[in-house]
Image (cartoon, rainbow, N blue to C red):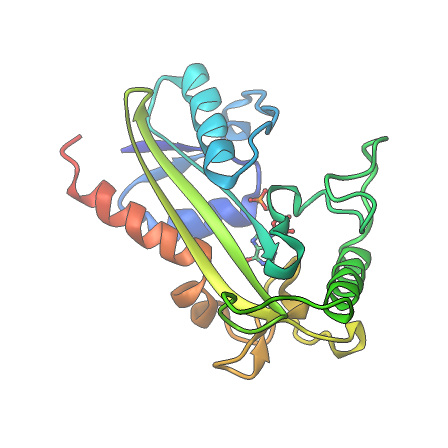
Length: 218
Ligand code: IMP
């Protein structure tokens, strides 16, 4: 069956096509559809629903949408839904003029901000991996129509490294070179794509949605 993916990201499309191999994944761009909804949600699942509903309204066909980001426990979940726009301690939600800083600067700022918080004292009693705990989240929606939909939200736990100079790894993207996995003693950019997919927020959310989709009689 034809499923629209609420994204213009070709890497995401390729990844989804492999996972949902019995179906045809189509992006709005593939069909010349203008799609750039405003992500006004304050959490991942709200944004994934906003994207799914906006695309469904255009195509009236089953849609998959996701929203993801990184949250640092000691910073109260910053940058969270603003992960792609994060521009340092003064600009958690992005710069007012809409300009973005490089990923390397985002990584350096996030470490600096966490180091400051840790220096000032952090109650990490309920954090899974100590004061430097962080986690990725991915919320994924399969919307058959606006009254019939399925959502999975999964996390991927780790810590942030202490010094930007210790960034490591060529795989992955985004915050992966500074996201340390205690069980591997490696960053998320050092493990293979297959290893990451098996344990990552997006990999796990995809697996749940795939199971649901395979069980539906459409
Ligand atoms: P989106 O869900 O494609 O909008 O991604 C939001 C942002 O979250 C990305 O631009 C990255 O900064 C961050 N992010 C989400 N997932 C990952 C990941 O697996 N590795 C690194 N960064 C990620």
